[in-house]
Image 1 (cartoon, rainbow, N blue to C red):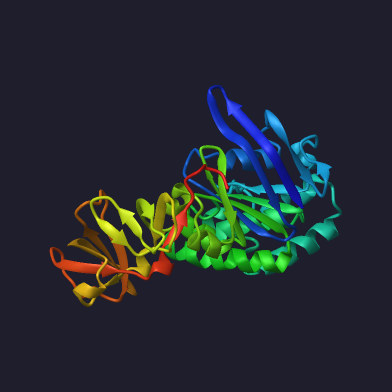
Image 2 (cartoon, rainbow, N blue to C red):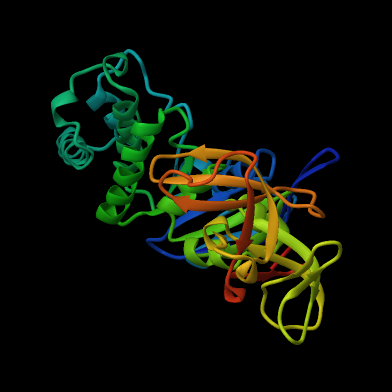
Length: 347
């Protein structure tokens, strides 16, 4: 439905977007993920009509979107701050955009009542924003955005103002709401867990360029660049040369489990794929436990290994059975190691 082609936007000497190309399908929940300053919010503003690119095209259903003024685009933007009118009730906040369009009062009432039921705020219709919780204010902002029935809803860090528990609840609510109303959602976030839990597909951006576009599962399992491997979830990245007989030869360390090959490169191994080896014959690495972090259902163990400049991370179920300072042996299956492309930053 949306085609973004070679979009570039510069601010003086800073290139916020550098030839970005993306395609977003109708009814898709799509996420733009990346660190601060990577260009994701600038791209959102280009789609909303608040920024004009220096080069490139954006089309919606094959029609030029850049030539349409912001207020006439079938696109709505939900701001990070929610931007609710404090002197208006919930229902009047939601009805504001429809009233500005001059719709009949009866139709406004029907649409507002329907969207209040959708977001579960019918009982709070007469309340003011200051009488609501953070999660409820976020629902009001969502209701105000979807009541105008846009083709595309843009969400800029929609959950960043919420605490962890409410954020988790609202992630489920956003998914439910998106499926129910059938609108294409495009969310901007720097939170990888948020993107992974919400999106059908994710575009990872860095320094104004698209690094990879994939489903959450493929993005996690098969990162195509060192940046993606390090940004999306924790990862252990080893540099060396793949051997035809199998394994990665790492200078000063030895041969680590990896698929067979004949090239120098990077290999990534996720912490959950690494295990504490039972004996020396099963060991790939030896090191000393540096730190243990307990998260309830699992523990993250950091192990310093001679010859490696960073600790090796592994995840074990429940409390760790080792202590800081202990000598440990580590191992993993060769098929758990993923070759990371090093020929360029873009897929």
